[in-house]
Amino acid sequence: MTTAPARNLILETKLKLFEVWDVHMFDFGSTKELFRRFRKNEDGNMAITFAGGALALFGAMGAAMDYSVLSNAAARSQAVADQTALAAAIFVKNNDRPPSSLDEGFTAGEHTAFDLGYDYKGWVKGGSNGVDVNVVYDDNAKEARVTVSGKTVPTFIQVLGKQNLSFSAEAVVSYLDIDEKHPASIALVLDNSGSMAWDDKLARPDGRSPDDAEPRIDGLEFSVNRFTGDLSSRLGTEDASGLRTIRMGMLPYSSNIISNNRVEMKWGYVTPEEVERMTPFGSTNSNPPMAQAKAWMDVENTFHRNEAERMSETYREPLKFIVFMSDGQNTLGNFEFIAADDAPVYWRQFSNGAWRGIFATEYNNQFGYRRGHLRRSTDRLTIDSCNQLKAQGTEIFTIGYALEVGYYNTNNPWNPRQRREVNLWSQTNAYNLLQSCASKPENFSTADDTEELEAAFDTIQNAIVKELIRIKS
Image 1 (tube, helix red, strand yellow):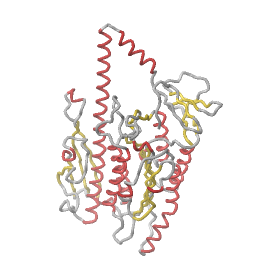
Image 2: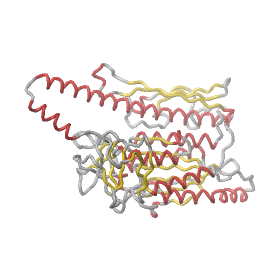
Image 3: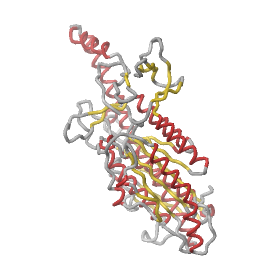
């Protein structure tokens, strides 16, 4: 992901030295002409028309921001409902009764999200204290039911008389559908390239960072720590007989696996100290870490078999999971053209090896151009590793993080005003790779900012727990 001069409507790339001049999706010359005519026009109708159009545009943008906050709160609430219902059902399954105090588990009745230890980061009215969580244990149906509800406070659509926006979520888990805990091996493949130092939110029109923006790496560390911490509290590290059941490793990467941040597969979970060593630096190449993750999974059965023999327990083949997160396309490797009728760019390769592209919205039957994706060879190699993993039964979850199209502040200490762009081409390439690696469509998620990244990790966490405790409903 790189910057671009706004004047250039052509995207050029070099095979040996990758340099991108972004294709813009509008005619910049026409836009300048519009403003020139506006300045010279002395007729009041022009000003009125412009003001009315601007008001409608900013209103639409404001409403979109308000509903994005609502969507984040709703996603977080569904994760809270799922996690609470699962924990409640597991407690009853193990103890033949509901918990009698919050020290034991989630008691029946009304609680706030704050009471139960959930955070909402100011998304909602009253924060986590303003979110209600109702827990019901139904002995007749043999199930735990949880509803979560609250309100967000809109910023822009208050002018339309809307003082708040309501959200809710519900989850139901049957006690009878929970089987014994299953062993598992989990590998985290996490992008630590230089762009992970950028803001997680688009820069404001005046170039400044939004007040709630934070470096992407901070959001990743928080999300991974909560992911591993919640898995630990819900699954523990061993079963009732003392058999160790969970193994985890972590592969932070940029141009290659970052060796001093790598955490080898081990019994138990990645620790906060290990997670917080991650540092953004360098280019992007997801091939080495995915190949290493495959090498790990190839031998994980042996570790679990040896553990079962040590404990004189029946060997159960572990379930295997990979969580693959990236905030951009691969930037290393040779270019490969893949024809596609729905690609956002038309491409042409010249005799000197350079590629030139034009966005489909600007394309006008230029000679020699073909519509398709210009991907890296490292994409193909990454997908090959993913396909081999999936064929062997490993379930892969993928997340595209902070890939909303637009400009981001880079937090460069030597150039505080520096911004870089995610354009439609780079977004599409990143999404294509992640979608291709995911085990199924619902295993791929997008997270425009830190809040959505946390929600994505929550969703993955719940999916893994459901597999490991054999939720059949």
